Length: 159
Image (tube, helix red, strand yellow):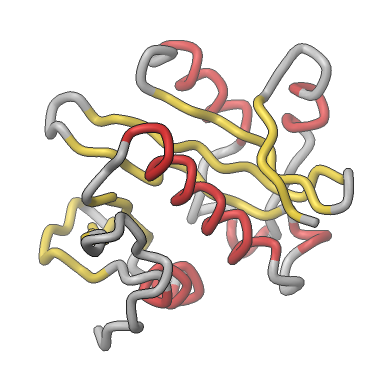
C-alpha cells in the first residue's frame, strides 16, 4: 500500500537520504533543498514522504504559490532504488487527492525540465497540459479539475 506521511523529527533523516539516479539529478532538487524551502515557506508548503508497505520510497511537496495565487506540485521524486514500480503514479495520485480534499482546488500547476520526458508523460496522464509558459528549461503544466473535483479520471491529453 502506498501512502503519504508528514515529514517529522522521526523520518526527516531518512528523507534526506533519498536520491534519484545520476542522470536525473538536474531534474529535481535534493530533499535537503526541498525541506529547507518547506521550512522557509512553512505556511504554504506541504512536504510528504511517500511510503510503500512501510518503506520510504519518495518525496512530494505540494504548495500554494502566493505570487500567482495557484496551488502547485512543487517537488516530486522517487528514490532510484524504487523507480519503475508504480510508486510515482500512486504518490502523485495521493498528492492530488490531498490538494483536492484539503483545499478544494480547481486547478494545479507544475513544471518539468524540458528534457525530462518521463515526468512530462506522467503528468500528462493525470490531465496536466502545457500552458505555453517556459522559464529557462522549465515547461509549465496545468491540470484543470473537473466538476467533481477529480482530475484523476480525465483522459490523457496529447501534447
